[in-house]
Length: 216
Image 1 (cartoon, rainbow, N blue to C red):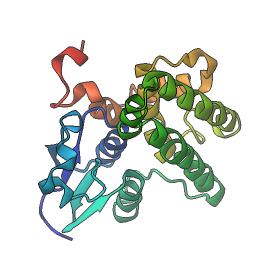
Image 2: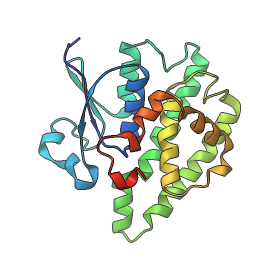
Image 3: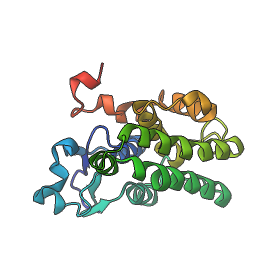
Image 4: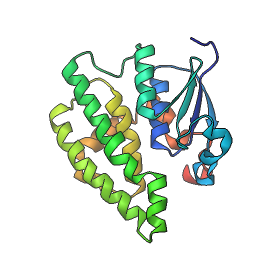
């Protein structure tokens, strides 16, 4: 493995980058940040496209390679740095974790991300209402799954990749005005996770590129 310090390409409000920041914090991996201003379109600039051809964040330079897509990055970190694991050893619990990860990272977040919302707005739609609807529909399923899988956290009593994905999505839900009282398990688990240092440190409002007006 390369001795070079890892570099995370990130943006404060990106839930995908939020996930990876949390994972890095949880595993105690020290890295440098390179900030990509999504609202300024910096993800489309040639110098960044050379790093990440998908024109999104995050991307992670680590071990002499470049990784893209948040779930793939987290799985790589789990496999190469198994200390403080985020996947249970039990195969059934692992499947439950991956199911929740897919529900959030594959079904909910992609259809309310910046690229989609800007396109909806360009077509004359209400981007906030679209995001709110998408999160509500997805959270209905997540809440039902949590009623069977959760303990203190999403799957049992240990922090997993499901929790790492849940907190950023709850942050998005709050941004778009979702009534979280309809999802008491999601709300309770996210509140508890938000008190953990790895999650606090990764929060958008604690990032150097977060505008001061958003921190209020």
